Length: 445
Image 1 (cartoon, rainbow, N blue to C red):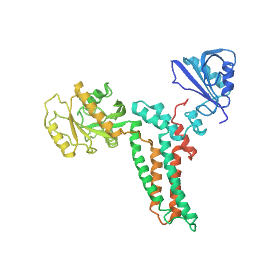
Image 2 (cartoon, rainbow, N blue to C red):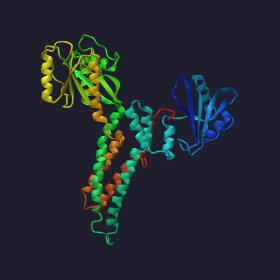
Image 3 (cartoon, rainbow, N blue to C red):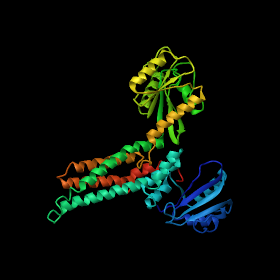
Image 4 (spheres, rainbow, N blue to C red):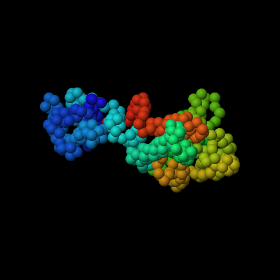
């Protein structure tokens, strides 16, 4: 990290203000070359910026953050410019002319990690904070940036070190005057810890859903009203609505926010047997998306003469939605409602033409989302990477508990469990993993 990097920290395009940040050993040199001298540390100073040829770039606020008291732990600087593309481009060109290079995605945060300013779990929280669109995503990301997962991991590791010390005392000093049950004392610690880590691994799914969105699939036969309902809930014409069966061929995902949570509402192809190759592929994709959804809404045209067969992907917590409530109910509605009762599904009857019905249905869906994702605290672990490492650690602890008479092997399993937990915060982690994580960041962060 001997080179100095720069990047815009604000989005491309016109804006009132654009921010360009620098980090590295030549940051001070760059500030002096452009602004004449470096301002007082952590104090905004209004300066005129000039390139190497003496041409004025802009009048800007300049901030100087000498390391290690900076975001990256290195010497850092920021230029707050007028936000025109030509102004920003001129500054970037001037920095390039001074021998600095454009930062790679996530490189500022990676330098902060490598300089000990934050751990890997906190760095992932920063990425989530930048991407947060909803209140609950914001809350969860702030908890991770604040070190919630790091603190829990540190407590787990401390307990493992305590248990490991008991095992190693029994192994290394068998002839010393130690209590006969010294190794057995570790057992209740490991049992409690294994259960807690397993619970945290299961809770990862909640964290993933908060970040990525709660998935709701609209399913049903052609012309059941799926696209009409999607448009009504979304408040815009997201899907094409026609009287021609089979209009929807692909899965149409619409992001929404309910009760502070992100959800993905998907209109899917009408379920029916068809010889049309394109429509058949649409049905396959519909079933695939629905099978992995968190909630399925089975839509049935209540005014139809014949009830379609229920989708095989339905689960007991799903919802039957009888559409076209403004028309007289017929056999399809009665038959589907009876089928729903046998399956343990709740039933709702609506018409997309009624704003009150749509408000009520949104409220019902919000209740489902909150029940699935809310908790007293945001989940500590929120990513697939976390879940895999937690499952590995819990498995090692269960293995250690299964070998009460082979203390050397039990001690090694505890040691491997601690190593898996250390990978969560990046105390030990292969370079390839770091590359994948930081590549998801935006440039300038």
